[in-house]
Image 1 (cartoon, rainbow, N blue to C red):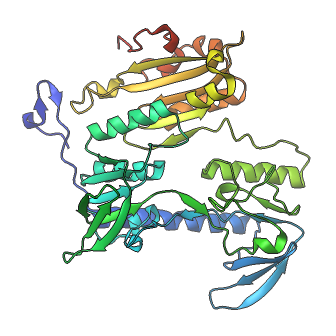
Image 2 (cartoon, one colour):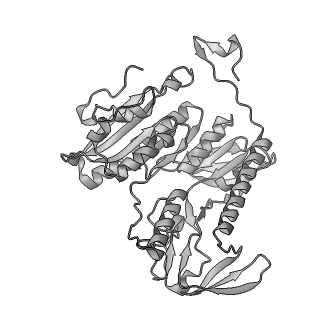
Image 3 (cartoon, rainbow, N blue to C red):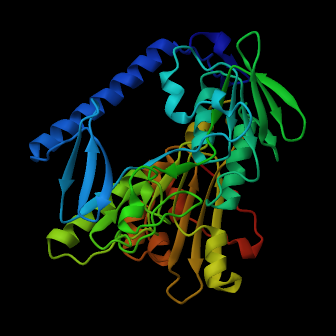
Amino acid sequence: QVGGDENFKDGFIQEPATKVHWGVLRENIQNYIRSLNFKYRVRLREKEVTYLNKLGKFLDPHTIEVVDKKGRVSTLTSSRFLIATGGRPTPLQCEGGELAISSDDVFALEESPGKTLCVGASYISLECAGFLAGIGLDVTVAVRSILLRGFDRECSDKIGEYMKDHGVQFRNKVTPTKLEKTESNQIKVTFSDGSEDTYDTVLSAIGRQADTDKLGLDKIGVEVNPKNKRIPGTLEQTACPNVYAVGDVLDDTPELTPVAIQAGVLLSRRLFGESKEAMDYLNVCTTVFTPLEYGCVGYSEDEAIEKFGESGVEVNHREFLPLEWSLSLGRTHSFAYAKIIVDKTPQQNVLGMHFLGPNAGEVLQGYGVSMKQGLTFKALTDTVGIHPTSSEELVTMSVTKSSGEDCSAGGC
């Protein structure tokens, strides 16, 4: 809440103090999740889909054994099966690792997490660190190697710098080697470099593994990737011809809910309709909801260079100050960033788009449609931008990395 003159300094509005009632926040989130689950059940019923709250495992390619919550066992047969069991957080493998929680547990905590250590540099870890710091908590991220592996390296590093500038602390090149409870009911963490610190909460976000251990896949001749327990497949079909997989259980695909939904829709159309359309796993828009939001679609710069060669790729980029940041004292020294990766063919096909700034998901979603239609750089720059928006920066780029020119945007 911005009040009188005490909220102004040197002509800028000061950032108001953040006050969060954890119990209210937790209850509101839990109620929202319950409402979602209820709506899903209703939609299944409306579509005349039978819902069985039972745990299943394969006995053979056409039979599964199911157990309900009372321990009653029965069997089900089907001509086809679809595996969509998702993934679970990878537990922290060190002495006392059971003291750490996962991102699944954050909003089940009765009390505020307090001083928190986020272990890992995944998007889940950085998102959690970002919103916990945003509500005023003391937050540290333990990074074993690099931030956001698999995303554009330049953009990932910019996110790290922004988070440091906005209060998140980083311990680089370390992993926890020991967690132990203290007399004050905190958690003392010993790191691989010998340093120590004490936290109220340790949140492990070092990756996820597919929830496939108890499915009896050995009974149907399906093996999993030993690194992540995900199921290899082609066109969502596993090694067992009548068993399919979508979502986080399918190996070498983006771990995103909308991807699983779309893959399931397209698979259903192929199996029960006349469609032959396969899922496009490359041109998928995604957003990392860190304090500096990051939206992207297509190749990262490194991936494009690896596939097409450094001489076959051009990068157009721009650094800019979003209008809504220009009046905020806490953000006037930060910059948003966008880049477009283009091949050097005469058509100048757009290979990837990356945007660091406010509302990144909203900005990139529409460009994702264009990417699926074969977007070219000329079509992009021929488009008249909406002023004054951050999105217009993507259609007004003129500076390439190879030129060595300053990519800072001027004007409003």
